[in-house]
Length: 323
Image 1 (cartoon, rainbow, N blue to C red):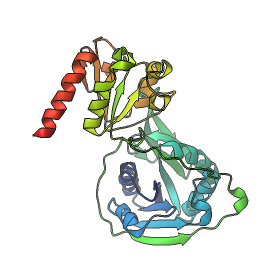
Image 2 (cartoon, one colour; image 1 turned 90 degrees about the vertical axis):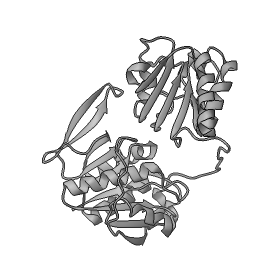
Image 3 (cartoon, rainbow, N blue to C red; image 1 turned 45 degrees about the vertical axis):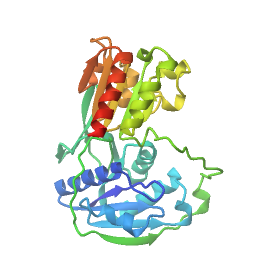
Image 4 (cartoon, helix red, strand yellow; image 1 turned 135 degrees about the horizontal axis):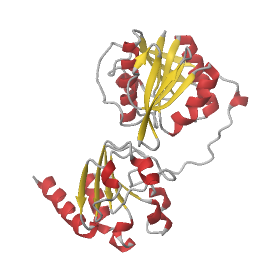
């Protein structure tokens, strides 16, 4: 019996969300009085793999193979399922990101496992196995009882603290071969965005809404984002009007993000927008309407005109950076 943690890499590197996932998975293993194993798929060098050992896992399995160079959900689900069986895993943990959301249901079917998607706390109980998750766009929570012998969980981003613990993990290198007929994904061309922080990677996001009043008023917001090393984003009405590109649209119908800090400038906080940003660790809102829904979700708020508040925020950050 063990807990298997799938640790996704990006171009051979692990991100903060991976270490958060490891911290969660190892605590679940402690609750079950069992071991925790990290599973890495793809080309990752030894130095990077060793980082996984800093968060409590007992073993690291590094899986490589020609069919694993490109993320193919069917192939990856088969690989994770086979190693889950080999390790005797009763709990399999993945991130609740795009790949995790695609892999987890396939994995649950292969393992005949119950699925807890988007859990945000440690299990409330192990007998029976009860998990906590947000519901209704973060406006409520649910306690889900999983009665199957094997459970597949996806962890919501920014929902668990990173805890460092060296458990003396060993690295096991494995070559995985699979029938080429199962591979359905081919990469024809790769285009990478340069010179701009991706929304899904950003720790800080500065976002604007209709309260910005015009596309010509975006200068101070972009300047603030640059000073903070942040990504820029916008609400759906802004992208629909063509003020900003659709790739910056956050919300239920756009990009769902979970930065450490989300600054909502001139955004009222419609339900669909909050559904896409409610997992942010801290939300700071600026709006002229003191009753705007965004203030209910925000930890800090400023009632005021964005055009007057933004320049003062820019100056305050500049002053802070010169100290």
